Image 1 (cartoon, rainbow, N blue to C red):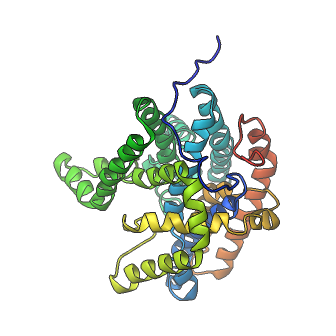
Image 2 (tube, rainbow, N blue to C red; image 1 turned 90 degrees about the horizontal axis):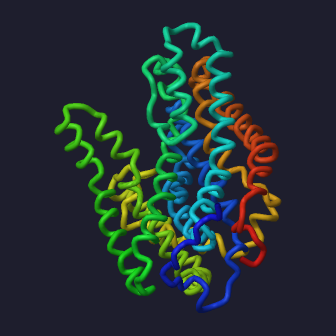
Image 3 (tube, one colour; image 1 turned 90 degrees about the vertical axis):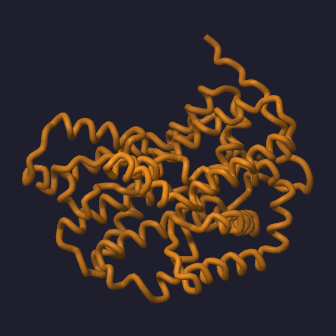
Length: 378
């Protein structure tokens, strides 16, 4: 049976205004920097927490990796949806990007648990291990069985919670475009703005909501599920959607004022951290996210050939993100706490594994994508 043709989408303004080439950008490099921020922060936090200060962490604080990922996801995935001929095609492309490396990561993690002798040292039931493997390789990565709590930091690959959130984003985007197919571009964008405000408020009140849910149900499960849902993070993704739909107008502006935007973003983050004493990272204050998005786009479309010159078209950021925590936990299990050499070795192994994953797994599968965003001149 032929795939059903999608209903017409609300008019997009992404192709109007000043000319620019959507596909010529530095997104691969930006994603790699963001993934490296997350990996280095996790490695230092778990392996040598006394080093969580000084110039390195001052720089890392200026690169909130997860908010960058979520904004870029909205920017790029909305473009992918608008160019997909059908829901199956869209879903196929998304799965080709996420699933092969995720399954490899899950398999390698299982080998690590057996190879280190950890599973031989604890009581575990095969069915629970099987359920955990299914969760790790699908959309329930936030579940961690009790028998794995003694390995490393207690969660074998805690970074994978964002995979579940991303998949929820992908589904929510389709529902959003399908629910508003007849609106004009202006009304569609107004609806997105309203949703940004609504979900941005949910983000600002996430800890209060989490506490209320936990208190109501008498456990921490509801609060954890709330943070693992798309709800507190969706406004970041929606800001990316808005930026994509108006990219032809926004990109020339952020390129023209890039130094002012970069300086303002850095200054605002420093003021929140040092002036207001806020803990940043994933929990960037909602009003700063639009400014961060402008900063990301200014870096992406200024000197857009920089990423290709440095990386040669290789996008290893996903690998850095998903492989680093099992290796950090391996170093913990092997007694690497307090060792700078353990941090360096962990990051080097992460980089090597990410390159192999890209060359042998991710890139071959990505060649099967349809209407790739990497199309020259797109």
